[in-house]
Length: 625
Image (cartoon, rainbow, N blue to C red; front, side, top):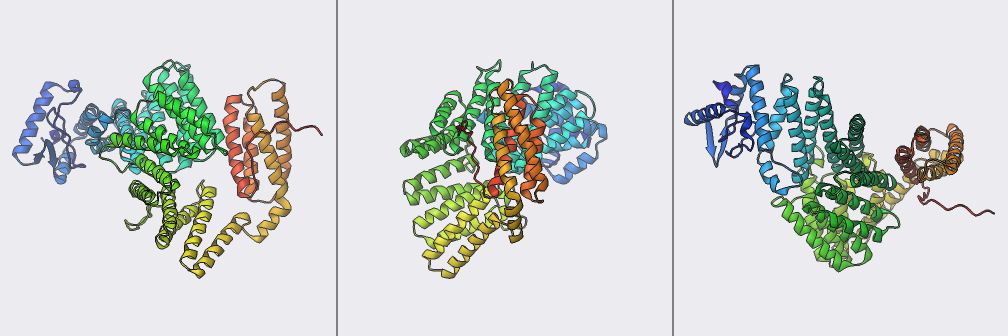
């Protein structure tokens, strides 16, 4: 019957027609799920289909017409359809060999990726599937998402697969069976979704996803009394991802705390000598080094030491390439340009070996960007232009999803990574005295930054500075081209932007001067007290009591200023800061530290936006007068 046409065999695999290509006709690696009778029947149907030209086979792959596949599906009873879906799930699990740490599995996995996604989608249609098969489908969909992001840089598709996985896991958990297994799988999927959302610069949703994953894992770890190594590994992985996210948001203190917690958990693991743990420790050391590079002033020697330790631990190609790239960045900052060149060449070789035919990868673009920066520092302008141009070509491909709806294919995606490389091309063009070309590229950067700032993301301060720099370079180009009217227009635009940043309107500026200055300084004072309190090495003793009392008194005084201040951003930020610190002040040291330092970072950004200089160093005790 037509119901028998959805099947798997050792020689063939048939689908419902969502994909035109069928997997290679090779035997599954784990065929024990099927009896010899089922294989014989499947082969018989396969031969019948070919004899009636209902299916065509080419290069070991079968294709079936879409209308035929629909007819087959609709002719099935619910029981037959459910049985066929379970066969497909088992088939995919036997054929899906993807392992993130093993690049040799990537190519084979890509050949059946669309089939895996199709099976997951159909699994969601059948609400009476057993929890066991829903869990398997959810895990397959999660792995498809990881593959799409890691190997293909297809972040939108990856997000869709991970969200499909969450729907499956939630539907399975609702059945009330094996709830613990579903919760554990959900934490893993939320972790991967948080990573993919970070890749797309969606930091708010990324943090929400990661924190939910951490909450589930912590609850499961408590239930298991900390005896499940896989759960502890998941907690360490998520702490690491939260640290990377905070680095992206430039909350360096909070990032360092997350990463250090992750590193400590990994080193204290019973499997601390395993290759997998070494690789994870190497990744965290790499990110801690990035924090030392990003600090002002940077601690380049400390970063270099951490990166060399990371390099000694990691054996995976991708990790070694990333560490070499970061070592090159440090070497450039230290003036060791030849050494940086060697690091970058080696990193590029490793990435090309890793990604094979997929040369349009975000990591290759990052190396090209660094090579362009190195060539520019050496004043090798043509070489710098070529490197930056190749970087732009890759990023235009990777971030194509960020193009505005209805835009032409030749329009630039609205993404910060694209604007960064456009800016560097503009600077190189200016140095080459190609002023018209430079202005053209810088105008493209201007348009992207303008649209990004309109979206009011968490990067608004960075975007604002980037726009001011862009206008400066546009003015320089216009001046060299003798476009006096354009020079004046750009000067006026830049001046107006700076004024808007300093005081949005004259009325609001007057209010800030008369009513909010005291609040600003009191908020700065409270923030310093909160940081000192959070960074204490011990949470008990006389010093802790003294610092706690100082902070409590400061928060009471801050409340008085908040009460008298007008309704504007400074008041809202100060109130949020006070509320967060008060809610954490009595918690154990490790719990309160991250929350208080994050609140300090958020208040710092608001203070700087109001034009105040904020220092994050902890001053030594003041000398008595």
